Image 1 (cartoon, rainbow, N blue to C red):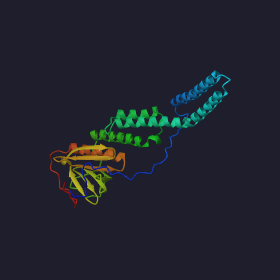
Image 2: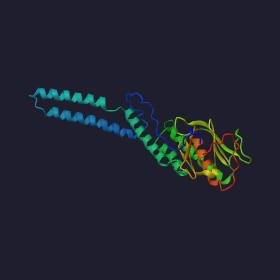
Image 3: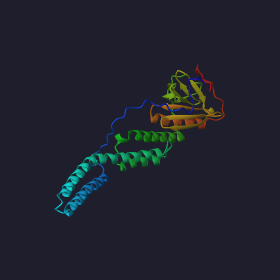
Image 4: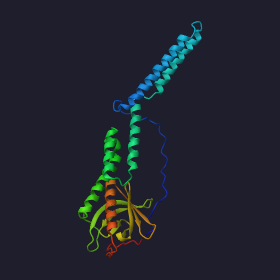
Length: 280
């Protein structure tokens, strides 16, 4: 393999530190979350209770000690101002509730992993409605859920129907068919190659500034992690990674690659006619 191609994991590349910005609390419609109203009532009760306490102290102070009475009044006024300034507004309390629900939903999405069942995915969609989360607030998570649903539908079709066939501008071996072609980034470092990944009947191919072809009989395992399709090769510790542009493309590529690798038997594979066949 050309030294430009990178395999396996790489050290994370840290980006320049972003300038520190003043924290602005999230706000939301106070009427949206009824649960946040209990926090509002608690804050009002705190103010009311503080006022009653100060009033009781003022009434208990002997009238012949006016200095203490004045200090008590000033202290009560100061406490009221501090509470009014420090207690979050209703919109901020609703925003905090929204943040909590978003965190809870994202945790549940991550918990099902990259190979969820249809029932788990449908439960997540129902869960988003239960938490009163809007589609615009969970767009990335919904894209992941719908991509997984699309992949499950494809896997079900493969059990009963033939593989999809798409047009390919690349030359193919006699009898070889292209089942998917999608733009990808190959590798995980700054020297990554950009090009197209092709899934054909007999080969996993990458076409870019450097070409690569791997017979499905050489593939040990295929996994998907987010937008990445991770291919492990037999009789070696090498792993090749392809990063797709979207979740849907990655999910479909993962299903098709798994199917083709599992279906590949100890058969003769025609030589790849591509002019640049990179040796692994």
